Length: 387
Image (cartoon, rainbow, N blue to C red; front, side, top):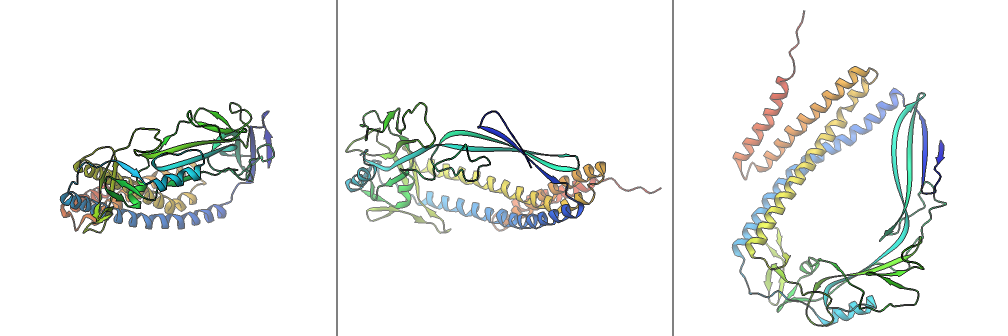
């Protein structure tokens, strides 16, 4: 192994040399990839099939919720109780305000390592050239420098003197109704608190913008320096207020003086909270759109898993012919097309099976498309001619 260092300690390059792998080693590596491919291929069926059932169940739950929803009046004011605010004041030490969530975010100035690698063959050896770049950045988590390639000049502290913390009000009311924990957690429209009206806590702490700095020079920080910011969500009336009062729209089940989750006949819990003033129709429409986007995202993920699985399982054929450049390239192209056709057809068939009991016509159309792809691929294969 050889190392080459740039002029600056912020960058250096490492070159690792390994003997070119033999045929048996490449075959062994391919066999391991086949196992991974088989697992991905199997899991893709489960993901695609269960995703369709989830999509149908969620849509049915939303339709049921819209059919039984009853407006209870224009009560949007979010009011955490005073005890919760005393808790926020005591834990933060500096900030007191009426809100649902109050977060103290602590960041430390640290070294961060980035790697960029490329592989090539030279002199019958397989070489890996890795370029290591080191930058100093503010990070909210401790970056361990113990595994840096060049740790000596890029050491970070092992812990922060002050930790980040989020305080959540135990009891939150909208009008006369207390919110469940699930609804409270949905109030997460965090905004950064301005520190212009807050005194500097200690002599060794400096205020710069909306941050408290524990640094000799905030404009030129050193590794290990800290900066602290405060964030709030769900502002209510009463007490110190640093922003406009938030309005929320809620769909949930009324249980006495509480708003809790409603369990639909399909089995899904229904508990919606949107910031701002919205009608029930608008909220359910937004949920339907979110359900559609999630369904297509999981379909794409399932197809990709299947494509990668088929590609890994058939890679052994490419390994067997990789001694012949022209044949290798043709086989590689053929295997990619094969994986594309098979993964697309099987994905459509799996999705169709998920719709079989709900929309038989849709299942029939998807199955026809899946079979059509295979037939189209077969027609593209030239017939063999013998002389």
